[in-house]
Amino acid sequence: MLDFLLAFLGFGLLFYLQATFWESLFHEYVLDLTPALRARRFQMRKLWPSLWRAHIDHAVIHHHMTFRRSYTEMFSHPEEEARLKGILERQYALEDARTFTRSRYGASFTWEGLLLVGVPVWLNFLWLLALPTIPAMAGCVAANLLFSTPYLVFSKWVHPYMHMRFDLAMQAAPPALRLILGSPYGVATRVSHYVHHRDPRTNYNLQYLADLLRCRWRRPSASEWDQMIALGLIEPRHRQRLEGRRFLFHPF
Image (cartoon, rainbow, N blue to C red; front, side, top):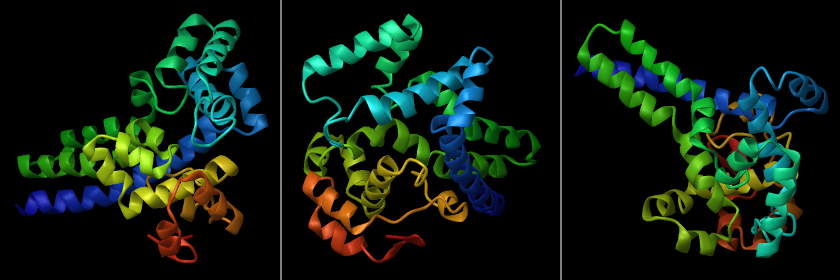
């Protein structure tokens, strides 16, 4: 039991730090590129096409080609989605266009994307080769699943609901996701993600900490709080609980 507990706590701290930094850095240097990095990545796109697809899917399609009229509506009418599909099929290879569609235009990601984004999770299993006892191995696996995966869960399954009105998201989401969306963490992430869309050089994390330590965190402005309320993205009670306070050391 002691071997399990020590491995779980030790690896839990290591894996959480690893995951939050990986998410923040991956988001900044793969998904949301500066113009200079984007130019270099374009030149190298044939060496690692999945990285280039991930960038296009997120930065170009999700940030700029969907949710154009409203943050809470991916498309304002069915013809808008059909038009986007046509644009993607003309501008990109058919395989790439199909990948963008399967990822819900960057609102989620494909299983290919899961392999890419989840690199820390897969690498952490290599620790099992160095551990001497079965309880220590079990603690390592449990820590990996619990502390390395929150950002993956948020990115693939929770993120689409973060762009919906809060009341509609709570109606549409499966029970397990409703627990996340309605939790203080789920609401705080909803707020910080809105700031990221307003200012894509900040608030990368869905698994909090690295943005704060890397000075990439920004609190919402008063006008942004007003906008979120007007959109129905959050409710007035959420603003009362968060505005001007700290949540997990992050200023809101």
